[in-house]
Image (cartoon, rainbow, N blue to C red; front, side):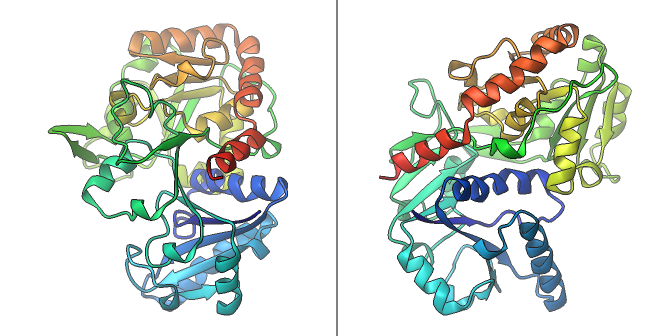
Length: 383
């Protein structure tokens, strides 16, 4: 198939090694599966010509490292990305005529998080929305026009969206579920990490909330992790966060976390590229993962692409339950928790029986997150 991957999250975020690593899986996997792919990356201009040129050059330097330069096009818009006439964009990586032909001939657009909007969206014959943040996207779409209705197929990693007790608004659409894609050939299992290495995670330190049906829902990883601030003392095991708290730290979170035994590092130092991101995961003993509270409150069944990378690396994961254990086996290699006591018990169990959990982690990744199966699931839903 001729498939266009529409995205807008990486070109303007060169220091986001985790975000880059997440998206790179898709062009690499679809290309390896034999499809003719075009990665269409949208970028809003900084209004500084030299800065835009550096940003785009850095984008192509990185995609070239992964053999994707010939498959990648950047559209630079001189306005907000909520209105996208193609003729208003400056095109890099392909001339305008060939781009129009590629769009016209494409069998399918996979549109990540509504990155492509109208009128560009309507140029494609068949359009599928891929939602990686269930609940957050749908509630946002109730107040902001994301051109949801311009799609033909709706896919989400919210594995429980169709469950009777799921509270994710469906926006009047039929949603198909798929698992986060990890291109396993890029993620070999690493040798077991010794006991001195911490359980880690890489996260954004944000405050945002959303109002839905008279209730405020937190989409803040800060809220999520502060609920477990006493965990290092209870589990008696090193725990580290790569979190962009920043030196200004207006809420005074850094001294509180440090006083409770957390180790802190800057993501820009340890995970600013896909390679450093992978190295950081490989150097960890496992992951302690807290989702955005909205995923727990809405019972979305969400499971992190980053956690899958830990599992594939042979790094056990302790993850707060969102309902994912209904479809992903938890107990060995991956342990779900509900509160600080069960979180501490899970870390102690993994630390005490590490070799067993190390082997099981990779086995879960291979059994549940085979990239070929994810591609088949996505394309089957679109036919």
